[in-house]
Image 1: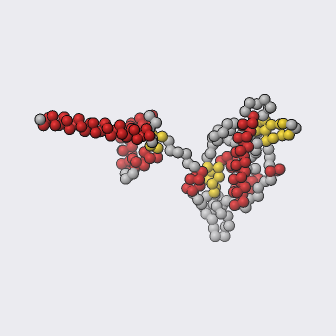
Image 2: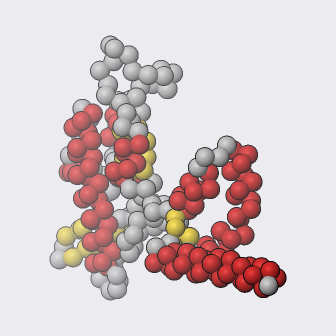
Image 3: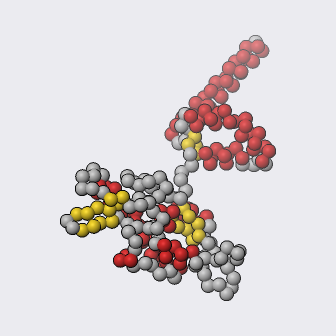
Length: 219
């Protein structure tokens, strides 16, 4: 009788664990955990050595859950969150930085504290000690390159059109009338440029930098 109770109890324990595991899988299928959540869960309340042991113990299970899509990468850091992480620095998108004119970039750099000076002094009127770059490449647009803004040009009815400029962008590609993606790629590049110039106008105004007039920009 005692043996029967022991077997029954053991069976029920396995059944309880089985049901718990199935419920966990169902929850993860509805809402997968992120890598950050897994790391926080396994490290909370542990010192480095304890976390390392726990991480090693659960590593095979975590790898299996990743392969099943039940643990997913963390959401990309938004530009707003990027800015809020270091409010004392000026934040700028990489694509926006590339579309400055050379003179603009030189003036922009000169508004920050020289590298030999660690912080702003009471006599220094500059607002920021330095700037930081938000990596927004690759841009999620057809016709754009992996790590550079790509601009386009074309001729029509005796007029020359260019989507944008910037001394750190890729060389402008001239498109022929028969190019299938001509207008889509040109429009995408123009949208990138217009957004960046709007951002630069605001940044330059805040820093007291002179913006190069559109008629003088190098295309």
